[in-house]
Image 1 (cartoon, rainbow, N blue to C red):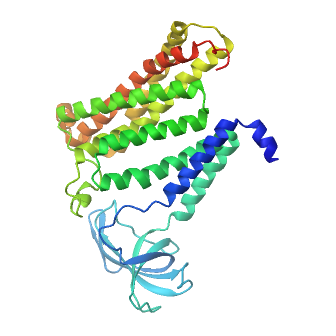
Image 2 (tube, helix red, strand yellow):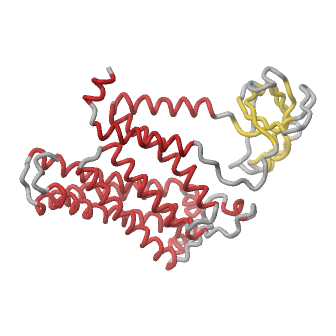
Image 3 (cartoon, rainbow, N blue to C red):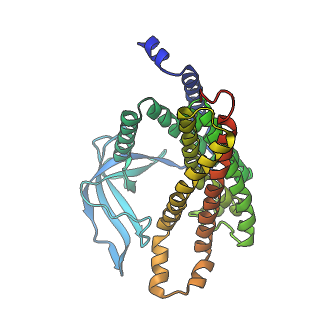
Amino acid sequence: MIKSFWQKSNRKELIFLLITSLFCVVLWFLPPAKKLASPGGYTLAAKVVHTDNSALIKHGLLWYGSQYLTVEILSGEFAGKIFPAVNELRASPELDKLFVQGNRIRVIISSGAEIIPKKTVLTAGNYDRSIWSFVLFGGFCLLLIIFGKWTGIKALFSFVFSCLVIFKLVIPFLIAGVPAAWTIFASVIILTAVIILLVAGVTRKALAALIGAGSGVFSGLLMAHLFGKLLHINGASMPFVQTLLYNGYENLDLADIFIGALILSCSGAVMDLAMDIAAAAEELVRFSPGLSAREITSSGFRVGRSVVGTMTTTLLLAYSGGFLTLLMMFAVQGTDWVDVINHPLVAAEIVKTMIGSFSLVLVAPLTAVASGVIFSSKKSAQP
């Protein structure tokens, strides 16, 4: 069976997949980012068996005060034990949770303290979303493998590798104060190369897509630096910035982190477009070998024009969706459109959308030219 699998699969692809798997294992065991302080406790899964809302006060549409709970621990050394718990609500809808009987939640248990069932009051945390998160991820993996088969397996490895690079390399480097934009740019190039080589194999198509995507991302990085300064984007519009600053990271360059986040967010669409054009060029040469570089490039341009229109709209819709409620507020207030585009949050989204769109528009001709040069060589009959 193993021999049959080895014969059917491209050996280069399998070797590259094994190397990527090894890097995933290494990344997994890398130490996490340095913590400012010990969390002072740990969390366990629990089930809410009773709620008491008598101490809650409603301020308009929001609740404020303490919700008293009775919970049953579902995991760990106290599994099956009953504890009282308290859930603090601060009239903050983005963070508050109002639990009801039957909810699965996470409760916080202090380290070193004496824990006595039915007496020690625990602190209620968030909903326990882990089970359904794993179900969702498992369904995604299953569908990807069923539909994509061998390519789906490689795509799944690229997904896991991307997550590990972001959480085990990029974030610790940024917290350590390493220049964010260039760090993320280097990470994006590595991710792009690994993802393209995993999905497309070590082929000319992969090389053309990598050249086009890398060139597009680099162009976007340069424009982001330029227009970030011209539009005075300071990066403070990103979520939880103040929390970071007031927890010992006041020296972070928020503008630089914003530029890096911009490049990271648009890199997927750039890579997708580059692969579309490179794949189209490969199919063209497969059925019409002997085409010149100019003919292949012209075909790549035509494919690029068709795809760019929808891809730029995709970025606009994606970024607009993240700030839909802000746009609704401007609408109900009757804010003038000039004041809208000068608002810091809107200006930041404009930079994201336009720089991402610039990168997409640039990656199309760059990939087309790279495909023309690569696929027009003497071996074009075997792309």
